[in-house]
Image (cartoon, rainbow, N blue to C red; front, side, top):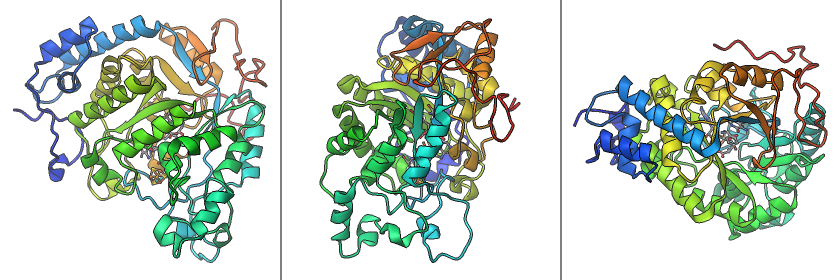
Length: 465
Ligand SMILES: C[S@@+](CC[C@H](N)C(=O)[O-])C[C@H]1O[C@@H](n2cnc3c(N)ncnc32)[C@H](O)[C@@H]1O
Ligand SMILES: Nc1c(NC[C@H](O)[C@H](O)[C@H](O)CO)[nH]c(=O)[nH]c1=O
Ligand SMILES: N[C@@H](Cc1ccc(O)cc1)C(=O)O
Ligand code: SF4
């Protein structure tokens, strides 16, 4: 068996049980993919590696996989390229979980009132979150995505706080410290949900990891927690915190995070509470292709059981400023070939998930457009602000206007389509009838976004590539 692993990491060091080796042949796997047959994990590994019988990525085979995925995309969702008018609002960077791929967080002790050093993190009160959303609503956005660090003062509600305060040593036992210990109070999760679900905006928030934090130290079910959040204004939940849903990889990159089974339990709880969810994979670090496909299997099984996943988002690891890179555990992120195959095999393997996203914040304009021809059909959203990728060293900017979107999508000959978060509402945009602005939200009247940004940057996307 040759080394078919293409990941730019020192993965030999990890001595993983799962390696990209199969008894299947690439040709068989490709034939099954072309026929629309359900793929096994072995099939997926063959496609992801372009065959475990060859070393590295075979360019001819890669094109065959991409073509099969592009064709499947056209059959399943047609040619439309969808995107959403949204705002990203991260509430706090305080977090003690210590994931080694993450440079978004700042350890929470730095936020304590008596801390004397400097740090670059932030916490927003519910009132501040509301003001940020209110201001963004004026640009026509109709979705707020909010993911945050697990601040020790964050609790679901006052009842949760009372339970945590009964512990002898709440910080050691349940990562809880009262707001009085900190410079700034993030309030409760319920208060933040109420604050951000203003003006008819769709609130997309509370990853399974955040939901875990919102029930820590209690025996509450994920479903009950998500019900409470939904009653406070939550509309759907992001399936991040997934990273790679294989225990031997999580042990290396995020030993402090919930495990694979608990992530699945969290997602099922959200769906049982009546929320749509998304699902993600964060790849291109220490994992190999077998892990990537095993992850896809976890997602496909979850979708078979629930039908609750609206989209799948492959997030390519941004390595520059992360502990994984600093400590020499990886030497870079995924290659272009790996990004293309990740999107294509997601499309082919996830036969029960309609929408596959190409994320410009991770790939930049040129590559994310290419990926729309490798199996992806969704092109993310305007976001207006971005901290996670930026702090990790990503350089593709923090927003795209509708004019940017229409220009980019038209340039590859596909129809630009504005969508709601749940994909139920759609509007095809006439590229010749500009300037373009969102129309689906309560305050979205078609006025172009970002024409009067306070920093004067206007609506031009950064020239990233
Ligand atoms: C930063 S966390 C915030 C929400 C919450 N703390 C959690 O972990 O679910 C959101 C996601 O960002 C992604 N992320 C973090 N650092 C990244 C990096 N360097 N490259 C790519 N994605 C990253 C991970 O997939 C992570 O689950
Ligand atoms: N809403 C989407 C985002 N938002 C930005 C993220 O919250 C985040 O900052 C970053 O992606 C961290 O991994 N990003 C997407 O890639 N896709 C979305 O739909
Ligand atoms: N990792 C990102 C990206 C993302 C957000 C929302 C999604 O539905 C999908 C992906 C986040 O946690 O915010
Ligand atoms: S990924 Fe989330 S949980 Fe992990 S350190 Fe970053 S903010 Fe904290």
